[in-house]
Each structure stands twice: as C-alpha cells, then as structure tokens.
Image (cartoon, rainbow, N blue to C red):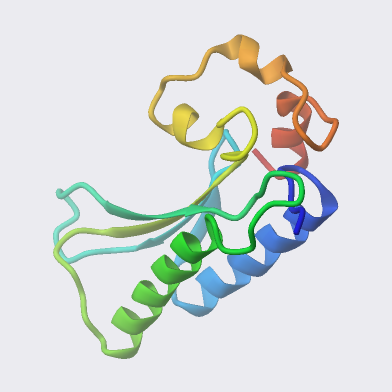
Length: 138
C-alpha cells in the first residue's frame, strides 16, 4: 500500500479522516505544517489539551496499519466520549500528523524543532515539502 505524503492517495485519506473527525463531533483545523487537528473542548479551558493520534501517510509500498490505527483509534475515543456525553476536564485533540514517513515534518513542526531548510527537501511524492504542505492546506 502506498499513501506517500502529499500524493493523491494521501489527500483522499486526509479528506476521509477529516470527515470522520467532524462526524465524531470534533472542530477540525489544519495548522501551518499541514497537520489535521480535531478538537473537543473540555470543562476547564485553562488546562492544556490531551493529544492523541499519529499519521496516515506511508512509505512507498508500506504497511496498511502503521500510523492509521493511531489516528482512527483516537477518533474512536472522541466518538465514544461524544456518544456517552462524557466531557473531560482537559480539551481533547486528535491529530493526523503530516509527512511522518518522509522527512518527518508534522510532529517536528508542531514541537518547534524543524529546520526551515527541510522545507526544500523532496518528499517521496516528488514534491518539495514546502509545496506538499501547501497542497494539503498548510
């Protein structure tokens, strides 16, 4: 299975995950690195968010369950909380990191540890990371 970051297959997978997040009652946004983040507010807005998730991109001809299970499992947690009308004290954020199987962009950007020169790296899709992030809305 190949769903390399920024490819057509990746974009379709990202759209599907976004719809699942919305159906689970999450407010969805895309950050500057292209990470998809779904948020469910907690009862205490002063508390930091609890973040769950992983990535849905793959290496060329990679495994089908590597990062997907982390993202889909996190969405299932949000869905179950919504169905049972459980409100956590902390906000809950579900993340689908961008390009974790290439130059590892999404999580590093979110943590503030990405070298800007990495944006010119050519990803497995053949696009530069910079152009790929733009292609997915970051």
